[in-house]
Length: 282
Ligand SMILES: C[S@@+](CC[C@H](N)C(=O)[O-])C[C@H]1O[C@@H](n2cnc3c(N)ncnc32)[C@H](O)[C@@H]1O
Image 1: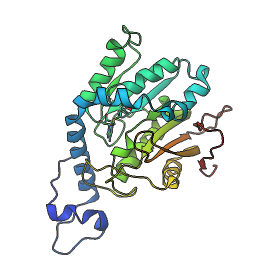
Image 2: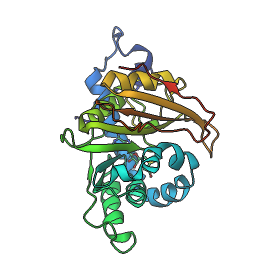
Image 3: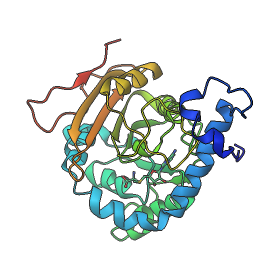
């Protein structure tokens, strides 16, 4: 993707006018907006990579919803995942990779990240640093462009997860493409388990921001179900919670790639009285 510089006067009208050229004003194409988003997002996260190990590992490992909802497909059926393969999207410094390998006996857990430094750190952490090389050889990580998973491998993973990533992708078109790549990368019957959050000063769900620093907010869980179903996922479920630190709305969603399995691998709520938003059945 090219690094497209948008004139300042365009930046502030893009959100409302993306599809409506303004006479006398340069009009950015969809491709330029996406390219600019990805270039600036990569710069931002690469620049922040030195903060990642401490910030993410210490804070997010204490989130009860992370374990009891997002990772519930693993915790609820630990034997099922023996010998299978998982991918952590936006792996940061390897926290989720190691947690997944600790929880169940995956054969491999890979990770991808828009930041090259994070991707390098994550596999070093899982392969060498963590507990005397306990997981050596069971994890590969790589840098992505931000637009996809950075691999064309279709039907490769049984489980794909992501924690505290999608809220940082303030461009719906990019998120929609990533979801569709997740669908392709899953094996038949595979599961996605994803997390979103409504951050302050964020752009609305369907905005395609040109600025890679822009976060996004969901506000309506139906939007998440719609996007999963558009990719072809079945058994789609979203639970809305309050983020344990900020109190802001957080969303945990899962979906399955056909065919449905005998065991229900959708995420489960922490509180048994909670009811999810359920997608239409296909
Ligand atoms: C807050 S950190 C969370 C890291 C990790 N998921 C965790 O839970 O510890 C957000 C991560 O998402 C990555 N990221 C953001 N946008 C991305 C994109 N479009 N594609 C891949 N990774 C992305 C960032 O580089 C960063 O490592």
